[in-house]
Image 1: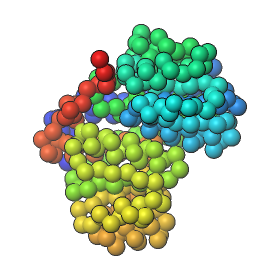
Image 2: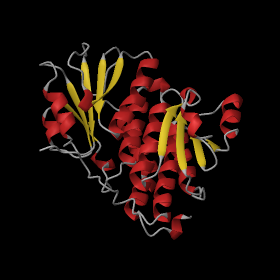
Image 3: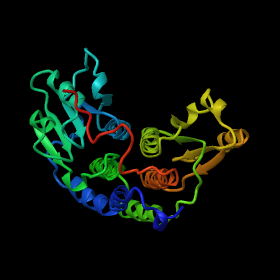
Length: 302
């Protein structure tokens, strides 16, 4: 499978390929005084659904471990009736129309500052916000999200300051992922692993493959995989680790007959490799990644 042989998933492939440029722009945006991004010391709740929730989880882990303040990530549809006290809520929504995000914002305590991170402006989520982070330049035609979440993650990692990535190096790693051939055959089962903040990215990577390919794809925090899920592994299983495995972990996985792919890039850049394989695997099965089954751009409950 090579990019030149793909006739399906053209739009998604173009959006995947645009990520280095989007990341460069997001770095400039995050390094400036972007209104609404959490200040050091603020207690923050980050809301999202699907892909947006996984970005929220990665950011929450990075921000809190950086000592910048309590940071929780929550699925918007699962907002508990009793909330902690927060200084700011960050709502992530590419479309700005997701019903569950709107409903969550409507029940927040009065006066809570809300920052909406949007791919599309002039939408219901933005109407409930006190601040808006404009990521419309990373919005997508595709139903399946690729560049919007990674662009947001670049902005957020940059805003974390000293703990943020070397963005020039990150962009270079992204370009290497784009240049790499998608030759890995379609596995019977895909398992994506990650440690720390990358555990949330593992969930996002598996989601891309479920959405685009309609395949059996799972994701776990690396240390959890041997606590039960590994029992399903065998020949035909591809275990894709976004962060390094220990020798013991790798040996245990290989002993099942599964194939191990271990990333050497930053997990965010490695996510691009997974995205590209998802498009290629979909095309190999006659599926169009631009038109995923049973999905729409936004979940709107009327």
